[in-house]
Length: 343
Image (cartoon, rainbow, N blue to C red):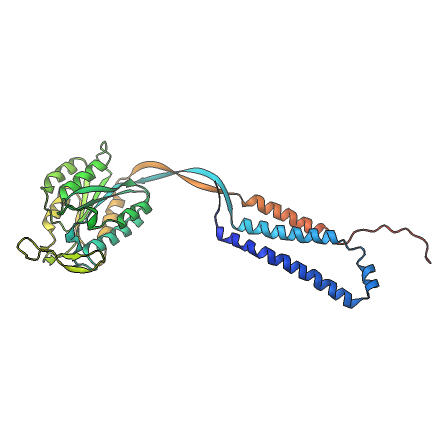
């Protein structure tokens, strides 16, 4: 496959016609100056040995050299080269709560946006660890399988919104169960689950699933996000405007509050830690430091395709033509027969 590393530089070739015009004007100006310097007969005798063809060839070679130099600067690349890259790290899955309660604004701009910003910063810090994403509310599903492509993980993260899962609730147990099945079953270590939620579980008993996770060697870190005092859940329309607050069947405003006790139990059962989200965004930094200290495994090596530069040949041809242009004389040699001093 052929491409240019810097394709915008190719636009400089549009200046070549201007270069041709420049040479034409130079030749005309040169002839005009010579005609003013000497009479037509004298000018003809002085320019008799000058080769018009050689002058044109020198100009053509100069223009071709400029063209080749522009192509070289654009760095033409051809083909690919496979380079093995060895990676060591952990398998990390982040389960993000996308239920309506995560739209509460006790943390600005809201709980969900705050969590997504922290996750993105965390993913960008990873070096060699595989990352996966799980979205959950009343149901849970794998949004992004374990991957070393951090750009793809961030792309999947951006679309994690409450509309992604129409089933209401907060299925903490199902989110943990999805994470367990997403890890390599044969291993009993190198598994880290980061659970980011307000902790208000409404579906099943998550602590039963946590026991299974502990047996599978999954270390769970919990990040509680929100206020423990209780705040209303805003309702947002398609335009992003608030239309009111969520209410129950009795027309009472539903209050959501952080359930720290459940999250602390989940973390304690698996040997992980519980952190409460703060404005300083240090929770995931602390988790990252803990992961750095863990024993790492060698992950499947990836093969990254790299394009091979092919500008060297163009530079070589340009240098050769430049030398040719310098060596070609404008005047041709004339053979004169000696007819005596007075002839």
